[in-house]
Length: 301
Image 1: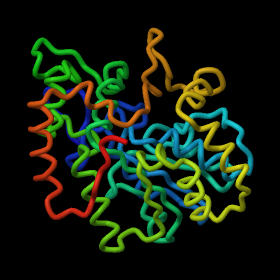
Image 2 (image 1 turned 90 degrees about the vertical axis):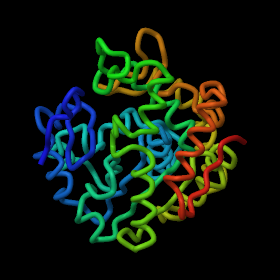
Image 3 (image 1 turned 180 degrees about the vertical axis):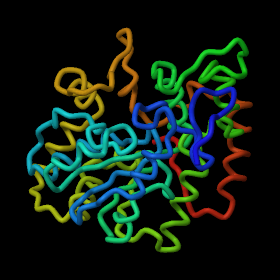
Image 4 (image 1 turned 60 degrees about the horizontal axis):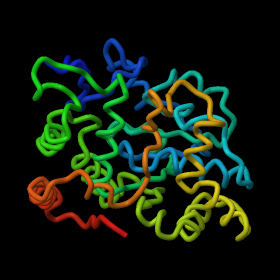
């Protein structure tokens, strides 16, 4: 059942705060149940990432690999984003469908998991992910909300935001720690089988190598020149420019001239945001949350 999140305008479904996407309003119950009961095709490819961990980047690479050419898809990844669209619109989408979602593992389409359809899961170090999400949230009306109280405002100041996230108050999509811990458990227990795991930082460090691994997982044929061309076309700057000049859709890439859907895309920007004290506190929280976990993140290259 859904419930109001009290003093916060976003809705809560099964303990998880969700952005104010139109299909989830006024209550998310019906749409979230529809996602879980979605009629998956055997050829469906589902990209599952926490926000700001490389979903658009991955979507573009997968699209090019399936096309067999390094041509930009005019659509943003939101065309197949399960929580933001009318699911009926996917009925006429040609196979293989590239789908995406930020919803936690427990909300994924049951058929997709039961059939062993392909899933791509990309992780990014939490410090950079949260810095990026903070900057995105400031310009996304489906996430941000003002308040007469600085503490209740979201995302508010950076200091209030990072404290909020460490305490998981605005636990959008369950919050980073629970989201990734649940994925780790699902992989370990074989609740998900046909999954390809990538790290955002590895894609930065060795794009051709990571794209090669992904192409092998997708079982598509490729030439070395194609992989190099895709890596070039999907470099952050080229992809950012393409998003502004080529992409169509309802999700804005810029707000008042500020690029927030594709902001920086670098590894290590967190060092420009975290104070020494905030970093120490965050490390303590991260060590506690990931105690016993095998996850290892890269915080700078």
